[in-house]
Length: 119
Image 1 (tube, rainbow, N blue to C red):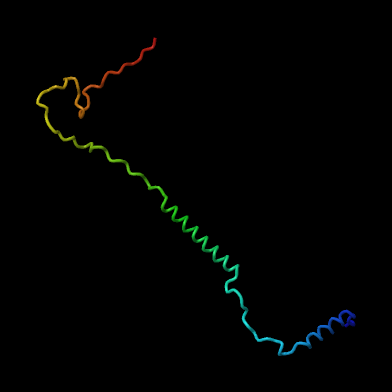
Image 2 (spheres, rainbow, N blue to C red):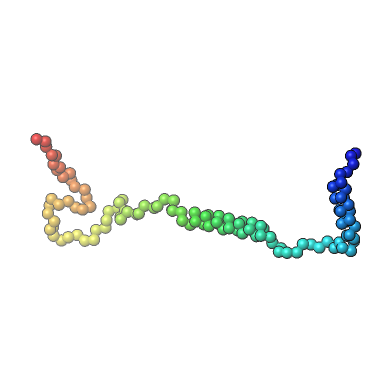
């Protein structure tokens, strides 16, 4: 082993003198630390978790409540096409012209269509 340097000897002597100044009466019994029960980091974590949970619940509620119906139902027809409309009364005199078709029956012959001719 090498001999200690003068600086090392002085440091050891200073630490030894300081250690001799402390005895058992100076040491205190163990006490739990006092202070806030919740640290700021813990509070931030809890607030962040609550905020994320609320945001997720709001997103789910928005998607469920604002969704459009799957398929809109078609409007029912004005009358059932399979049945004929009920007759209310029969006119006593024939005032309608003979060429006029009934609104409930299709025309007997299609109306003539004019075809444009080229010149």
